[in-house]
Length: 377
Image (cartoon, rainbow, N blue to C red; front, side, top):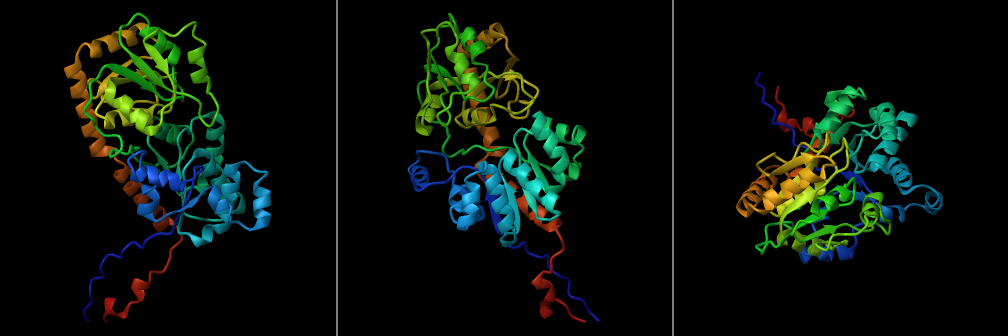
């Protein structure tokens, strides 16, 4: 009797449903094609994922649509995802609240479903409490900061095998080095920013700067309001929200980028840091417990003590007076992005996480095993 060695089974093209709050419109896709915005549709196109967003909910039966109008959007989307889950191999939840509500529904109903949860700030007390009690409804918890991995394991008691560390991403084709005269610096973002410290650091410094921050969905965050609570802005500072192409132009004109942060155990500032590095710019950042995985001290940027305007001013003037050093750091940052943080690498990592979650779910019969040509006796 001879036995033909079975070939490794091929992983099928998984049917994914990705749950998120934003909608990808035709204008968004047109902007991508015209190099006016990052490639927001690449994830969906590459993984052939259906997207649970507002347009998906609009296709639900009228009775459910009527109910959803009275619920927070993330609750409505989690409920609809649970209802249609059997049409998919894996559910990917792409926000903290989507992940927590969907996991809670699975736990309360005692149902199983391969569920990959991409979570951003699990250490907030209410989220931490919920996650500790519903993580059984998550097959794979995806995190991109070592501080949160430690918190999940040591504080919440989540088994390490449930956690997957995936570097975050930037669209490195949209945010790319663009040759330009660097006659200024900039600061970018709204979440957990310490702009009062930055403004105090810039007083009396003869360097132009723009703070790219403004209303988000028509609302000014407290961190942005803090800018206008300053007695007056120095004449070298301007403030205002920018479109993606305007932001890219700002990065290209900036000798380096400053990310002043409030105390935080999350990786706040990560998106702006990666955008700056992708543009080939050095980064000066407040040292916090959460922001420690991306910037390489002295190689791609500089850390300064949190909330210290004197130290921040010293770092700004030091790097401004050394354009060759700033350029070298920027080149190293771009190199690091290409090695670890590209959008394509992120999508491949999510695909791998989804495949692992699927394979860890209840055993499923592969039709390849029933092929008589694969077995001989």
